[in-house]
Structures are given as structure tokens and as C-alpha cells.
Image: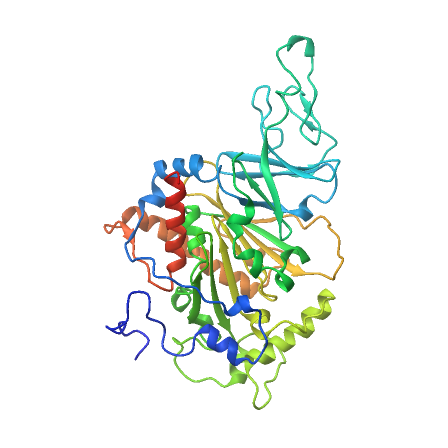
Length: 459
């Protein structure tokens, strides 16, 4: 059966797979001991109806998200290392919503609605961070403690109707997991653990992201809807065209896709093995040479994957001061990406340790802020410290322009997001009014929309 032949007539919807070994087969063939989570499998056919373009372009849908999605779901606001000391604060914005995160004098991180209770002025500007001994409105000087208690009202004699109890800053729910600070604006929100679900088990042990720290943080505005922006990263199906230069070393069509819950999905695609789309034959040495690991040699009987992982264990372990001997070849080099609804992607691997976030900017459905964060492993016992400031990459500039960004990887991200403006224009122009998804390779996108529909409907 050729790669581009139709699915076998006997295959039920969603059962067809790329001919040849899957990512799980390749990982098991490495001969390494791997976490059970890495080879766990859970796929279910979710249907094949089109996804309407209106859900990306419609102002009414966008407004519904502002009232029924963002104020009601847990979402990653910052890392604990953004707020290491008492008085540290940071503003998290999503659409028209703004939350002020503050570490109190008691060491507790709290979230407050970022608006003065006098005349509504934001207490801190969008996207800003800093350190303060109190929270003070820049308009008339009303002040609150770091814990949100009303501390001072200028000319208090003129406000006999203002009480300390009624004018404490309204709080949002805050929970911590994996070194991340999550917020939920719904006072009746259920615990974060219910949304994390399988991540609680999968991201334990050496995948515990609280043991990492931010090495690089890039932000870029993308000219499309926040949903379309993240969907570009939820499948490896695009590699054959968008990243054709990687076909010699990326097992795109071999990738495995898992639907673990309404909120958590995953793909795993291998690196260091040719794509089923790749035409021609390569030796293991030729594969390794294309992985840009200078000077590495593949001995007789070994694979490019094994040698690449071994080299990275030695180099990264020495550079970071950590022991990587227990990490499998797959964890060292493969693309292992989880999605946590609504807008977060997490990679537990070592050499591809990214975290993504996609959120609407203001009230324009066609403006998205993309946060690209690299979390590196650190020695046991490393304390919290201030992370590097986000580097904003303007439109038209390459991700590679960010200090510390690998030029080759920056070019890959350019390819990923260069498609988005053209897709947005196509949403407007297309006579066919919806996108048609693959049953397996794009199942994570369908699950995302099913969960979104359930929440927007008020369930």
C-alpha cells in the first residue's frame, strides 16, 4: 500500500494508519526503558464533519468566548519564578480580561481583578511586571495591601459609604502545578486537578516541570484567531509541505495521536528517522549529519537516534549540571507535545523543552499573542529566581532574531506561522465554509472544538 493511497475499504473510520512502523514501534525499537506514559495509547474516532470557519471569524463567537470561556476555565498565567519574592506582581491579559498576580508578604500568590474599585482604572498596565510594597491606583491614589485589603482612601471623609470589607480587591482563583501559576476567574470553578486530569500522572517523576526554569521566552503577535494559531501546532501532518527540509529526519506520518480526556491530548513524533514521505535511502550516518550534530559518528550497528541522544545527554548534562543518564533516547530527541485546553502546549522532552500559549489580544478575533517558552532542567535544589524578560519578535522578523534562539529552530517556527495570514484570508474568501480534518492526524483539533462547544453552550 502506497502512502497516498486511499484507506483500505475494510478500515472503519479512524482506524487507518500510515503504512510502516508507528512512533511507538520506533521508540520501543530503541531498546530504552521509557516511562509508561510515553507509550500509553488512547484514540477514539470523533467524527468527520467540517469545522466551520465562522467559529474563527465571527465577532459573535469571539464575544461568546469572552463571556463563557476565558472567565470560566483554568489557564496558565505565569511561572512561579516570575514572582519569587514578596511584593512581586505580574499582569496576565486575555482578550478584555486582566488579572493582577501578586505574591503577598505571607508568601502566597493571589490573583486580583486588575481594576480599581473607585473608578475602574487598571492598577497595573497590560503585560507589565514589577515589585511593590502595596497596590496603588495611578489615578487617585487608592491603595491596597499585597493581600488585597483596602489600605488607604485619599479624603476618606468623603466616602462614608466605602467599607474596608466591601472594598477589598476581588480575587480570582489561583492554583499551582508544575511550577506554573494557573488562574480561574470563576468563583465557583472546580479544582484545577479536574482539568489537568492525566497530566497529574504523566508529568510526575522526571517529567515534573517544577524542576525546570525558563531559559528563553519569546513573544510574537500572529495575524489570525487564537484557535487557528494553536491548531497549526497540534498535528504533524503539515510537515510534508511546510517543513519539507526535515523529511530526512522527522517521522511525521508515523506520529501517534492520543485523546486522553476532554482537556488533554498529545502527539508523539520521532526525530532521527526518515519520514515515510521521504524519497530515497539514507545511511544512519547521513541521517545524523542532517540533524546538525557536528562531529558525531554512527558506529557500525548503532542508529542515528541513539548516537544523537547520547551526544545530547553528555553535552546538555554538562552544560546544565544535571544527570541525564536515565532519560531515554525518545525523551532526549523526540517531539512529545501535550495540549491542555484551552490554550497551552507542554513538551516534557529534554532537547525540545517548549511551552506554548495562545491568547487573543484585545477584542480583535484576528490578533493572537504567541508565548514560546523554553524550560531547561536545573540542578536539584535550585531556587526561584527572576527569569529572562520576554523578547518580542515584531511581525516580519524571524524568531531567530531573538537572542539565544537557535537559528535553525527559529526558521522552523517562521515556517509554522508564515502560513497563518494566508489561512486567515482563506477563511474569508473560501466558498467551502469549513475545514475538513483527517480522522487520525487531526483528531486533536476536533477534540479541542468539541470541548470548546460544550463550554460555550454553558454545560
